[in-house]
Image 1 (spheres, rainbow, N blue to C red):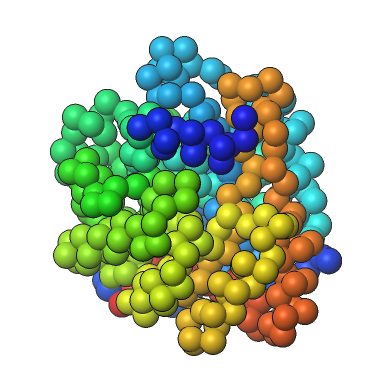
Image 2 (cartoon, helix red, strand yellow):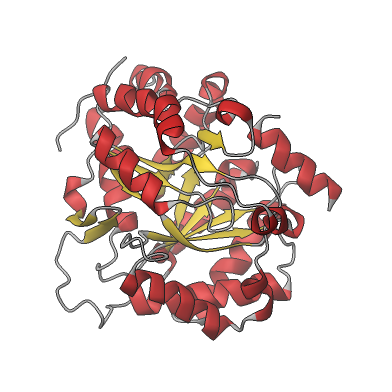
Length: 356
Protein backbone atom coordinates (compact mmCIF):
# COMPACT_ATOMS: atom_id res chain seq x y z
CA UNK A 1 0.00 0.00 0.00
CA UNK A 2 1.33 3.43 -0.87
CA UNK A 3 2.26 5.63 2.09
CA UNK A 4 -0.25 8.37 1.26
CA UNK A 5 -3.02 5.83 0.74
CA UNK A 6 -2.05 4.24 4.04
CA UNK A 7 -2.39 7.49 6.00
CA UNK A 8 -5.63 8.38 4.24
CA UNK A 9 -7.04 5.01 5.26
CA UNK A 10 -5.96 5.61 8.84
CA UNK A 11 -7.69 8.97 8.95
CA UNK A 12 -10.87 7.54 7.46
CA UNK A 13 -10.91 4.77 10.04
CA UNK A 14 -10.52 7.09 13.12
CA UNK A 15 17.15 19.04 -16.19
CA UNK A 16 19.98 19.23 -13.60
CA UNK A 17 20.70 22.15 -11.41
CA UNK A 18 24.00 23.30 -9.97
CA UNK A 19 23.90 26.00 -7.32
CA UNK A 20 26.62 27.52 -5.14
CA UNK A 21 27.09 26.42 -2.25
CA UNK A 22 10.90 36.86 17.86
CA UNK A 23 13.56 36.05 20.09
CA UNK A 24 17.14 35.34 20.89
CA UNK A 25 18.04 32.08 22.59
CA UNK A 26 20.24 32.45 25.66
CA UNK A 27 21.43 28.84 25.41
CA UNK A 28 23.25 29.86 22.21
CA UNK A 29 25.20 33.06 22.91
CA UNK A 30 27.37 32.34 19.87
CA UNK A 31 24.51 33.21 17.46
CA UNK A 32 25.77 34.55 14.15
CA UNK A 33 24.20 36.70 11.49
CA UNK A 34 23.67 33.93 8.95
CA UNK A 35 22.67 31.32 11.51
CA UNK A 36 23.67 27.72 12.00
CA UNK A 37 21.86 24.43 11.42
CA UNK A 38 22.11 21.18 13.37
CA UNK A 39 22.77 18.22 11.08
CA UNK A 40 23.23 14.56 11.99
CA UNK A 41 26.98 15.18 11.83
CA UNK A 42 26.91 18.30 13.97
CA UNK A 43 26.50 22.05 13.51
CA UNK A 44 27.19 23.76 10.21
CA UNK A 45 26.74 27.30 8.97
CA UNK A 46 23.27 27.67 7.44
CA UNK A 47 24.89 28.95 4.27
CA UNK A 48 26.51 25.51 3.83
CA UNK A 49 23.13 23.80 3.32
CA UNK A 50 23.00 24.80 -0.34
CA UNK A 51 20.18 23.33 -2.42
CA UNK A 52 17.87 21.72 0.13
CA UNK A 53 14.89 19.38 0.10
CA UNK A 54 13.05 20.46 3.25
CA UNK A 55 10.59 17.58 3.72
CA UNK A 56 11.48 14.02 2.75
CA UNK A 57 11.55 10.59 4.41
CA UNK A 58 14.33 8.02 4.25
CA UNK A 59 13.31 5.19 6.58
CA UNK A 60 10.06 4.62 8.48
CA UNK A 61 8.02 2.06 10.38
CA UNK A 62 4.34 2.62 9.59
CA UNK A 63 2.95 -0.02 11.93
CA UNK A 64 0.88 1.30 14.85
CA UNK A 65 3.20 2.44 17.62
CA UNK A 66 1.87 -0.14 20.06
CA UNK A 67 2.86 -2.85 17.57
CA UNK A 68 6.28 -1.27 17.11
CA UNK A 69 6.83 -1.46 20.87
CA UNK A 70 5.61 -5.05 21.10
CA UNK A 71 7.55 -6.28 18.06
CA UNK A 72 10.46 -3.94 17.32
CA UNK A 73 12.16 -4.18 13.93
CA UNK A 74 15.85 -3.38 13.82
CA UNK A 75 16.84 -1.60 10.63
CA UNK A 76 18.98 -3.63 8.25
CA UNK A 77 21.29 -0.76 7.40
CA UNK A 78 22.92 -2.50 4.45
CA UNK A 79 19.55 -3.32 2.91
CA UNK A 80 18.33 0.25 3.41
CA UNK A 81 21.49 1.68 1.87
CA UNK A 82 21.10 -0.64 -1.10
CA UNK A 83 17.70 0.85 -1.87
CA UNK A 84 18.05 4.45 -0.74
CA UNK A 85 21.64 5.43 -1.48
CA UNK A 86 21.30 5.43 -5.31
CA UNK A 87 18.42 7.90 -5.01
CA UNK A 88 20.55 10.16 -2.81
CA UNK A 89 23.51 9.94 -5.15
CA UNK A 90 21.27 10.91 -8.05
CA UNK A 91 19.99 14.10 -6.43
CA UNK A 92 23.50 15.03 -5.35
CA UNK A 93 24.55 14.79 -8.99
CA UNK A 94 21.68 17.17 -9.81
CA UNK A 95 22.87 19.83 -7.37
CA UNK A 96 21.18 18.86 -4.09
CA UNK A 97 23.34 19.36 -1.02
CA UNK A 98 20.97 18.84 1.96
CA UNK A 99 17.89 16.85 2.89
CA UNK A 100 15.61 17.17 5.92
CA UNK A 101 14.33 13.79 7.10
CA UNK A 102 10.95 14.66 8.62
CA UNK A 103 10.18 11.17 9.92
CA UNK A 104 8.45 11.65 13.26
CA UNK A 105 9.75 10.13 16.47
CA UNK A 106 7.15 7.31 16.52
CA UNK A 107 7.20 6.53 12.80
CA UNK A 108 10.55 4.77 12.87
CA UNK A 109 12.98 7.66 13.36
CA UNK A 110 16.48 6.18 13.26
CA UNK A 111 19.20 8.82 13.75
CA UNK A 112 22.12 6.40 13.45
CA UNK A 113 20.84 5.14 10.10
CA UNK A 114 20.27 8.67 8.81
CA UNK A 115 23.80 9.65 9.84
CA UNK A 116 25.15 6.68 7.91
CA UNK A 117 23.11 7.67 4.85
CA UNK A 118 24.39 11.23 5.18
CA UNK A 119 28.01 10.14 5.32
CA UNK A 120 27.62 7.66 2.46
CA UNK A 121 25.89 10.16 0.17
CA UNK A 122 27.76 13.34 1.07
CA UNK A 123 24.47 15.14 1.77
CA UNK A 124 23.83 17.16 4.91
CA UNK A 125 20.80 15.71 6.73
CA UNK A 126 18.58 16.78 9.61
CA UNK A 127 16.38 14.63 11.87
CA UNK A 128 13.50 15.55 14.15
CA UNK A 129 12.38 15.51 17.73
CA UNK A 130 8.75 16.11 18.76
CA UNK A 131 5.48 14.15 18.63
CA UNK A 132 3.10 12.90 15.94
CA UNK A 133 -0.48 12.76 17.23
CA UNK A 134 -2.31 12.78 13.88
CA UNK A 135 -3.52 9.68 11.94
CA UNK A 136 -6.23 8.93 14.45
CA UNK A 137 -3.76 8.42 17.29
CA UNK A 138 -2.16 5.29 15.79
CA UNK A 139 1.32 6.64 16.51
CA UNK A 140 0.73 8.10 19.97
CA UNK A 141 3.44 7.16 22.45
CA UNK A 142 2.56 6.53 26.12
CA UNK A 143 4.88 9.29 27.30
CA UNK A 144 3.11 11.75 25.00
CA UNK A 145 -0.33 10.77 26.30
CA UNK A 146 0.70 10.75 29.96
CA UNK A 147 3.29 13.51 30.26
CA UNK A 148 2.71 17.20 30.81
CA UNK A 149 3.74 19.77 28.26
CA UNK A 150 6.70 20.68 30.44
CA UNK A 151 7.79 17.04 30.63
CA UNK A 152 7.57 16.64 26.86
CA UNK A 153 9.57 19.82 26.33
CA UNK A 154 12.20 18.59 28.79
CA UNK A 155 12.44 15.32 26.85
CA UNK A 156 12.81 17.05 23.49
CA UNK A 157 15.22 19.64 24.86
CA UNK A 158 17.22 16.76 26.37
CA UNK A 159 17.62 15.25 22.90
CA UNK A 160 18.94 18.59 21.70
CA UNK A 161 21.42 18.92 24.54
CA UNK A 162 22.53 15.27 24.88
CA UNK A 163 21.71 13.55 21.59
CA UNK A 164 18.97 11.08 20.67
CA UNK A 165 18.99 7.70 22.47
CA UNK A 166 22.74 7.68 23.02
CA UNK A 167 23.49 8.15 19.32
CA UNK A 168 25.15 11.53 19.69
CA UNK A 169 22.88 12.79 16.91
CA UNK A 170 21.05 15.99 17.84
CA UNK A 171 17.75 17.04 16.22
CA UNK A 172 17.57 19.84 13.67
CA UNK A 173 13.83 20.54 14.02
CA UNK A 174 10.74 19.84 16.10
CA UNK A 175 8.24 17.77 14.08
CA UNK A 176 4.58 17.70 15.11
CA UNK A 177 1.66 15.80 13.56
CA UNK A 178 -1.69 17.57 14.06
CA UNK A 179 -5.10 17.26 12.41
CA UNK A 180 -7.75 18.63 14.78
CA UNK A 181 -10.40 21.17 13.82
CA UNK A 182 -10.41 22.38 16.52
CA UNK A 183 -7.22 21.03 18.06
CA UNK A 184 -7.72 18.43 20.78
CA UNK A 185 -6.34 18.95 24.27
CA UNK A 186 -3.55 16.50 23.42
CA UNK A 187 -2.68 18.49 20.31
CA UNK A 188 -2.73 21.75 22.22
CA UNK A 189 -0.41 20.20 24.82
CA UNK A 190 2.18 19.16 22.24
CA UNK A 191 2.01 22.58 20.55
CA UNK A 192 2.78 24.23 23.89
CA UNK A 193 5.59 21.71 24.46
CA UNK A 194 6.99 22.60 21.05
CA UNK A 195 6.85 26.29 21.95
CA UNK A 196 8.83 25.70 25.12
CA UNK A 197 11.32 23.52 23.23
CA UNK A 198 11.81 26.25 20.65
CA UNK A 199 12.41 28.78 23.40
CA UNK A 200 15.02 26.43 24.92
CA UNK A 201 16.76 25.49 21.69
CA UNK A 202 15.85 27.77 18.80
CA UNK A 203 14.69 24.80 16.70
CA UNK A 204 12.03 25.47 14.09
CA UNK A 205 8.64 23.76 14.55
CA UNK A 206 7.47 21.88 11.45
CA UNK A 207 3.83 20.91 11.91
CA UNK A 208 2.12 18.30 9.72
CA UNK A 209 -1.29 19.90 9.44
CA UNK A 210 -4.62 18.23 8.72
CA UNK A 211 -5.70 14.87 7.31
CA UNK A 212 -4.68 13.62 3.87
CA UNK A 213 -8.14 13.05 2.46
CA UNK A 214 -10.10 15.81 0.73
CA UNK A 215 -11.73 18.10 3.28
CA UNK A 216 -13.88 21.20 3.16
CA UNK A 217 -11.95 24.32 2.09
CA UNK A 218 -10.54 26.12 5.10
CA UNK A 219 -10.24 23.11 7.41
CA UNK A 220 -6.48 22.76 7.05
CA UNK A 221 -6.14 26.50 7.47
CA UNK A 222 -8.18 26.52 10.70
CA UNK A 223 -5.91 23.81 12.09
CA UNK A 224 -2.86 25.82 10.99
CA UNK A 225 -3.96 29.16 12.42
CA UNK A 226 -4.96 27.66 15.75
CA UNK A 227 -1.41 26.35 16.03
CA UNK A 228 0.01 29.71 15.11
CA UNK A 229 -2.17 31.53 17.64
CA UNK A 230 -1.08 29.13 20.40
CA UNK A 231 2.58 29.53 19.53
CA UNK A 232 2.39 33.30 19.48
CA UNK A 233 0.60 33.27 22.84
CA UNK A 234 3.60 31.28 24.15
CA UNK A 235 6.05 33.90 22.87
CA UNK A 236 7.11 32.14 19.66
CA UNK A 237 7.42 34.25 16.52
CA UNK A 238 5.63 32.86 13.41
CA UNK A 239 8.97 32.56 11.60
CA UNK A 240 9.74 29.61 13.91
CA UNK A 241 6.76 27.65 12.48
CA UNK A 242 6.39 25.72 9.22
CA UNK A 243 2.92 24.95 7.87
CA UNK A 244 3.67 21.46 6.57
CA UNK A 245 1.45 20.23 3.69
CA UNK A 246 -0.02 23.68 3.09
CA UNK A 247 -0.81 22.60 -0.48
CA UNK A 248 -3.69 20.55 0.97
CA UNK A 249 -5.49 23.81 1.77
CA UNK A 250 -7.22 24.73 -1.49
CA UNK A 251 -7.91 28.38 -0.61
CA UNK A 252 -4.78 30.34 -1.50
CA UNK A 253 -5.85 33.33 0.60
CA UNK A 254 -4.91 31.33 3.69
CA UNK A 255 -1.37 30.72 2.39
CA UNK A 256 -1.02 34.46 1.90
CA UNK A 257 -2.37 35.23 5.35
CA UNK A 258 0.02 32.78 7.06
CA UNK A 259 3.01 34.12 5.15
CA UNK A 260 2.11 37.72 5.94
CA UNK A 261 2.05 36.81 9.61
CA UNK A 262 5.62 35.59 9.16
CA UNK A 263 5.15 31.82 9.02
CA UNK A 264 6.70 29.42 6.54
CA UNK A 265 4.27 28.00 3.98
CA UNK A 266 5.45 24.60 2.74
CA UNK A 267 4.19 23.14 -0.53
CA UNK A 268 5.89 19.83 0.09
CA UNK A 269 4.05 16.98 -1.63
CA UNK A 270 5.18 17.53 -5.22
CA UNK A 271 4.79 14.75 -7.79
CA UNK A 272 5.46 15.04 -11.55
CA UNK A 273 1.74 15.04 -12.34
CA UNK A 274 1.20 18.15 -10.21
CA UNK A 275 3.30 20.67 -12.13
CA UNK A 276 0.44 23.03 -12.99
CA UNK A 277 -0.86 23.05 -9.42
CA UNK A 278 2.55 23.81 -7.93
CA UNK A 279 3.29 26.50 -10.50
CA UNK A 280 -0.02 28.13 -9.58
CA UNK A 281 0.70 27.95 -5.84
CA UNK A 282 4.24 29.31 -6.10
CA UNK A 283 3.36 31.94 -8.71
CA UNK A 284 0.57 33.30 -6.52
CA UNK A 285 2.94 33.69 -3.58
CA UNK A 286 5.52 35.41 -5.77
CA UNK A 287 2.91 37.80 -7.15
CA UNK A 288 1.94 38.70 -3.58
CA UNK A 289 5.58 39.45 -2.73
CA UNK A 290 5.79 36.42 -0.44
CA UNK A 291 8.21 34.09 -2.20
CA UNK A 292 10.61 34.57 0.73
CA UNK A 293 8.14 32.67 3.00
CA UNK A 294 7.75 29.59 0.75
CA UNK A 295 9.35 26.15 1.11
CA UNK A 296 9.06 23.40 -1.51
CA UNK A 297 9.66 19.67 -1.27
CA UNK A 298 8.14 16.26 -2.09
CA UNK A 299 7.38 14.15 1.02
CA UNK A 300 8.97 11.33 -0.97
CA UNK A 301 11.12 8.31 -0.14
CA UNK A 302 9.62 6.12 2.60
CA UNK A 303 11.61 2.89 2.91
CA UNK A 304 9.07 0.98 5.04
CA UNK A 305 10.60 -1.34 7.63
CA UNK A 306 7.47 -3.49 7.77
CA UNK A 307 7.35 -4.27 4.03
CA UNK A 308 9.67 -6.63 2.09
CA UNK A 309 12.56 -4.70 0.52
CA UNK A 310 11.12 -1.50 1.94
CA UNK A 311 8.11 -1.41 -0.35
CA UNK A 312 7.65 1.23 -3.04
CA UNK A 313 10.30 3.94 -2.68
CA UNK A 314 9.36 7.30 -4.20
CA UNK A 315 12.40 8.97 -5.81
CA UNK A 316 13.71 12.37 -4.76
CA UNK A 317 14.68 13.74 -8.17
CA UNK A 318 11.37 15.11 -9.64
CA UNK A 319 11.94 18.52 -8.05
CA UNK A 320 15.17 18.80 -10.03
CA UNK A 321 14.14 17.09 -13.25
CA UNK A 322 10.55 18.35 -13.52
CA UNK A 323 9.55 21.20 -11.19
CA UNK A 324 12.60 23.46 -11.40
CA UNK A 325 12.70 23.30 -15.22
CA UNK A 326 8.96 24.11 -15.21
CA UNK A 327 9.57 27.09 -12.92
CA UNK A 328 12.24 28.41 -15.27
CA UNK A 329 10.00 27.90 -18.28
CA UNK A 330 7.28 29.82 -16.43
CA UNK A 331 9.55 32.84 -16.04
CA UNK A 332 11.10 32.28 -12.62
CA UNK A 333 14.64 33.62 -12.54
CA UNK A 334 17.67 31.98 -10.96
CA UNK A 335 17.51 34.29 -7.95
CA UNK A 336 13.92 33.17 -7.32
CA UNK A 337 14.89 29.51 -7.64
CA UNK A 338 17.69 30.07 -5.15
CA UNK A 339 15.28 31.78 -2.77
CA UNK A 340 12.99 28.73 -2.80
CA UNK A 341 15.63 26.05 -2.47
CA UNK A 342 18.68 27.69 -0.89
CA UNK A 343 18.03 30.89 1.05
CA UNK A 344 14.61 30.06 2.49
CA UNK A 345 15.63 26.65 3.90
CA UNK A 346 18.79 28.14 5.41
CA UNK A 347 16.76 30.78 7.22
CA UNK A 348 13.96 28.40 8.26
CA UNK A 349 16.20 25.79 9.90
CA UNK A 350 18.80 28.07 11.51
CA UNK A 351 18.48 27.56 15.26
CA UNK A 352 20.40 30.64 16.38
CA UNK A 353 18.79 33.43 14.40
CA UNK A 354 17.04 36.37 16.02
CA UNK A 355 13.45 35.87 14.83
CA UNK A 356 10.82 38.53 14.57
